[in-house]
Image 1 (spheres, rainbow over the protein chains, first blue to last red):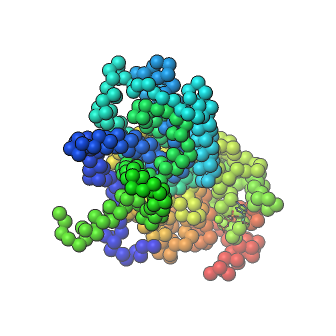
Image 2 (cartoon, protein in one colour):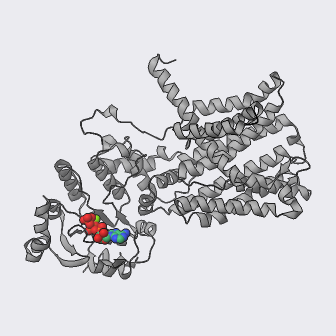
Image 3 (cartoon, rainbow over the protein chains, first blue to last red):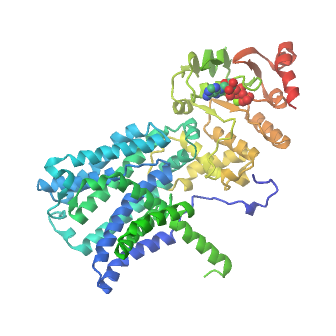
Amino acid sequence: MTPAAAPADAVPVLTRPRRTVVLPALVFAALALVPAGAFALSAGYLLDLFTRVMIFAIAALSVDLLIGYAALVTFGQAAFVGIGAYAVGILASHGLTDVVVALPVALLASGLFALVTGFVCLRTKGVYFIMITLAFGQMAFFTASSLAPYGGDDGLTVQERNTVLGLPLFEQPLVFYYVVLVALLVVYLLFRALVASRFGRVLRGAKDNALRMTTLGFQVYRFQLAAYVIAGMAGGLAGFLLANATEFVSPAYMSWQRSGELIIMVLLGGLGTLHGAIVGAAAFLLLEEWLSALTEHWKMIFGPLLVLVVVFVRGGLIGIGAALARAAGRRGPRG
Amino acid sequence: MVEPVLAIDGLRKQFGGLVVTDQVTLSVAPGELHAVIGPNGAGKTTLINQISGVLPSDSGTILFAGRDITRLAPHRRARLGLARTFQITSVLPAFSALENVALAVQARSGSSFRFFGDAAAEPALNRPAMAALDEVGLADRAAVPAGHLSHGEKRALELAMALVTEPKLLLLDEPMAGTGREETARLIAVLRRLKGRFAMMLVEHDMTAVFALADHISVLIYGRILLSGKPDEVREDPQVVAAYLGDEIEFE
Ligand SMILES: Nc1ncnc2c1ncn2[C@@H]1O[C@H](COP(=O)(O)OP(=O)(O)OP(=O)(O)O)[C@@H](O)[C@H]1O
Ligand SMILES: [Mg+2]
């Protein structure tokens, strides 16, 4: 407790929620420069790799919105990614390959699934919420596995990437890369506005103390359901992009392991920061890529490494970065 | 006679075999400060939980501003103008004092389904919030995270949060509990200034505060109203002195 006599400047002062600018700007600048780097190193696979990173970053952002800002620990977010992907795959198998159709369907389907499942999930709390989101995720997984006309267990090949008003723009890796980057930027900026808005403030308040919010007159459930639907649609967007990136759709996109990986990405990067989810997705997928190239026993290193970071580094990689920056600032004069 | 803001009739609550609220009947007039006193475990917090809707009642009715709210969800009761504070301080520790109150303003001021615009920079929320902080003497602590405020300051902050919702009735669950002598005196002064603006139901162990503020006192023992009357009547009632005020001396 703060003694009354403490000097005023000993107490942290919050005029407004902290809004980081520099680090997110650096992250996006780096992502924008990846194609140039890939070209310079003539390492074309980097383009594919980072396209994947950004797609999973979108999914991780949706997890961060729920866990980091609303304390809704969802263990079924991969289902929404899968639904978005299947929307692309199923429509394509019926000859509907334009973005104008595929994207709205992907968003609506994932949003609707979020609305219906969220309606049930959000009536539970804590561990029960985790378990029931997991259960719905598995339900989606098994449903996809049993879709015999659409490949069942084996999944479904998407014959060609979506066209944009008839133009085969997504077939160009570079164009598709920047499309994904813009999608990530839009989701990031939307979420950033969202968490600072009136709506976001209610979500954050309910995370701190739901009972207090209720007795202030907020029907916390409605706000959480809206957030759940928004996060579900962002997951669907990631799925839409993923199906286009891999030109393949599979039930594996919905597996609980995938949902778990999304949580780990967020924890790895730094929970409740948004840009941490992007950093976490990048760190996760790049580590996975490089370690698996190094040794076939990479999982024995990868697993423990993740556990170490998540357990011992509070605030994730973003937290390490911030701590280092503070330490440097304290030692030397400001640059 | 004016219609009471709150009229409770035959209210009951049982936890397993334990009857915690036993046929409670009482009413609070507009602008009145109605104190509820009683020993530990008498069921005062339970009663407040029932009125605010945090706990459902087994039987009986609660009329608020003439409307039956017995089965109404807690957030709806709050929207009708029923505010409360908690015995265990309940603020949002990660939010600044100003943001805690601004959130309460937001609760009252219509739509919170606004997805854009920086809520922390909205004068329409911050201005009334700042005025309320000023009213409870916390203006210079506005930017401090609520988790870093002293216990007494948190109590004052809760009061400010309740104020800005412009309630018809404010339920106060031991606002002086755990505060020092000076802070208690300050809170009494604040409550005295607020008296008359809206009705209050004050649960409090501090008899100085109760007798300084109350228009009406009800004594609750084992979930039953033992006695209800003007402060002078209650002070002199031998039953009360024996059952409660005498008890209070032991605490000191
Ligand atoms: N959720 C519950 N389940 C079971 N028993 C409960 C519950 N809440 C309260 N009680 C019991 O009901 C009785 C009244 O509790 P309550 O908290 O209402 O008392 P109080 O008058 O507010 O006491 P205090 O002055 O200590 O705050 C106590 O015996 C308590 O143990
Ligand atoms: Mg109590």
